[in-house]
Length: 183
Ligand code: ATP
Ligand code: MG
Image 1 (tube, rainbow, N blue to C red):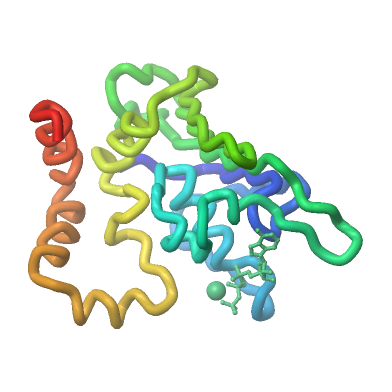
Image 2 (cartoon, helix red, strand yellow):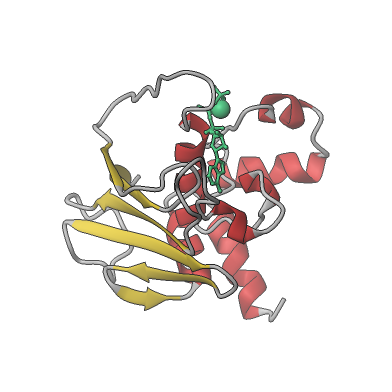
């Protein structure tokens, strides 16, 4: 399984100034008062892994992830999130033969998102597959947001099956089959 080692944000939600966090092996806790941006950090992680639903990001449209301005700070037009994956043990896909895999996503107001893997522009689909193969996808059971535990308990059996498939690491195979079949 790929380990996250760094998360970088700029212009993303409340993180207007560039911020970088190191993610050490083991357990990481994020503490702070209500509204300081704890959930925004988790959403940044989900977003860079290819989340396509604005609602999952607590917004009406995807542009809502861009810093929208605050007292004395004007709104931004670009948000960017990057995540570094530790690939020293070569646990990632074979085409990435480096010690680190850098995945980034950038959104420009009105212009949608672009993704890069190790600086090369990459399709959203391939970023999503990279993470679903690593069983850490944007929708994976590994990311449980506020209020989601209740939603899981009430989930339809088909949705629950999806979660089990993700946990088993086979969600990427299904996505590929659908793509091959043109669905
Ligand atoms: P809690 O402890 O209540 O769960 P939290 O630490 O998880 O709080 P978040 O929900 O991550 O807090 O952050 C909410 C803050 O982020 C709010 O102040 C909100 O105004 C701000 N915020 C969200 N989106 C944007 C945006 N696009 N531009 C500027 N600020 C934003
Ligand atoms: Mg929160």
